[in-house]
Image (cartoon, rainbow, N blue to C red):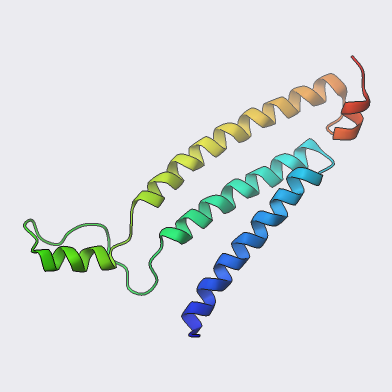
Length: 129
């Protein structure tokens, strides 16, 4: 196993561990604020995972053909070395969606605190009214 392969696997493992920790924080978090923070970390880690999947290790080239009329050999070379722009586009969209969801949930948490005086999930479920 080469050192480059080791670092690739280490990156995947680190992202999977962060996803597992953030899922644990969402499920077991005592406060709604902690759950929101864990959800934000989950979204950011999912975006990083998507970028990591679309990344080509080694020498990268931008997704632009160097000539106007490429030959089949140039197209074959280009598809083997160019970075795929689709994961990057999906991540940009996911960042905007994640921000909108985070702001909406923050608003709901603020309103919950105004109504009940707490953001602790167990206290909110015990309240009647």
